[in-house]
Amino acid sequence: MKYTSVLTKFLANIAMLGLTGGVAFAAATATDTAANYASSWGTSPPNLGSGFDAWANQVINGNNPPYAGTYLDLTSYGNSDGVLSSGYSWGTYANGSPGNGEFILARGFTAGPSGSTSLYNHTFSIGIGSAGVGGTGSSIGLSVGTAFSLSYIGGTSDNFWLSVDGGAATAVPVTYANLNAGLNVALAVSGALNSTSEGYTLTLSPFAGGPAIYTTSGTFDSSAYNTSGFSINDLNTSNDAFVNNPNITAEVVPEPATLALCALSGLAALLVVRRRN
Image (cartoon, rainbow, N blue to C red):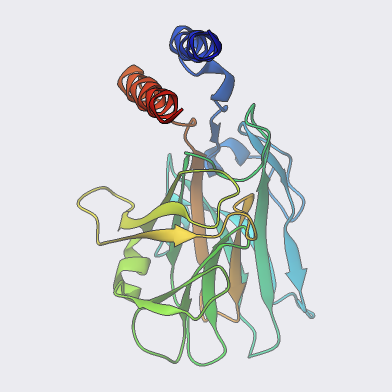
């Protein structure tokens, strides 16, 4: 009778999951685009779009006249900007000599029904571009929380560098020419939230569309490193950096077939326990 009671409750829970379709775990999407800020962009812009936290942009050692800042880039400006969307993108500049200028374009994520601001069965994507990085002491970088850092560093080899969980950076064979043309960076996170081995897939593709230039997969420690926001770091670049279209997809929820497999696995485990006893 004891095993029958446990089995009945277990199957009832599985059935409930199937009926709800995982709604309890669904997160709101987040999206924004530079075109939303046609008349309202600056160092402290309004929080437009949906699903993101407020902007937290920062000028570091801008000096006078300011060597670091931000502006709304327009098609009519004629810049080498590969991430224009509806004629706009966000531009950053930090064009002083080494140590003179840095600008950070940053935004946090908001918590969905799963209760965390970190990515969980989501894909975060953003467009980045550059009109010139420069030599030693210059770089453009994208960070997603404390878990991921992707950078193009001046004065070194012609490729990006990826660091996961604060570890040593590894070369990513994506060149400045790809960055100048405009890149779409997509980070897909899957697996158990707050896990030492949560899965990820990072894909770099042309912003204008087309096959992926580079894809890599692995795991990261989401119990120690978060994915709860993004930042773009423009450090002493010889020309401007460009950013556009940050987006977070809705959480992926289990399909009915997956739930059925979970039910069968659980049933098998209960039967094994019963047989041993």
